[in-house]
Length: 298
Image 1 (cartoon, rainbow, N blue to C red):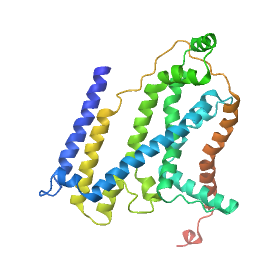
Image 2: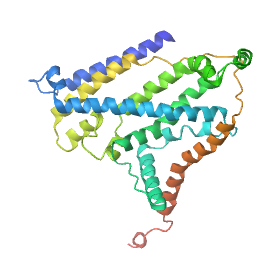
Image 3: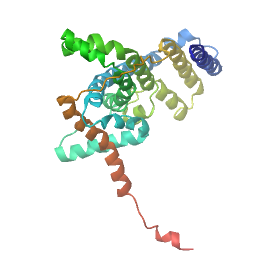
Image 4: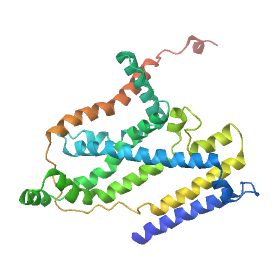
């Protein structure tokens, strides 16, 4: 299996390299890679892509940890089944639901919240990817051996030492794998930046390629950006862990319920259900069971 995994990884890298070679043929012949990298606008787009990806991944991790803990230790055990929702709902529908939710809050609370701009990009990426991190890490946390809890009681470890020295090393491979995937998703994000960017400067490489083709029909510039993006993806792919290692255990632990987790779990369930409620509301609000009169005329 390890040989097969490395073969697939090599095949993906080869396909990306061929893609890079094909795209490079469309770049201007009088420009080399150094001239492309020293272009101020391309430097800004590249640095912005890296900055928003890193910050979005960090924020997603911060919000994923309490989400993961509540899904693991909550009494209802419903939250763990809601974690895939943000991966199932189309990104466009999810973003439109967030925008409508913001409008409803502004109307009832008399506030002026606005998701348009860089902060909106970070909020949307966090809302989309924090559940994904929790979803990918939860199996590793569930596989925690039962006898570890007995050892904790014997050694009288504090909660902070327990999670840092025992739990974190066991879930670290799955967590690193999830964070790597989220970083790549944020780096190649398109719909979120297109809807919430609000400014041409809030554009990553993916959106800049779209703008170069759609609005300027500048294929050489689009090829330059695509070549740079492919090079960066090849570099990130080389750093990406090949697999998420979860140690199999014959007696996985049965998580004990926690009071704080029992309080947080209904709150997270409500937050997960809000986009679905808005989606259903819009569906029934605009649903017309009777066809227009013009349909019955000939």
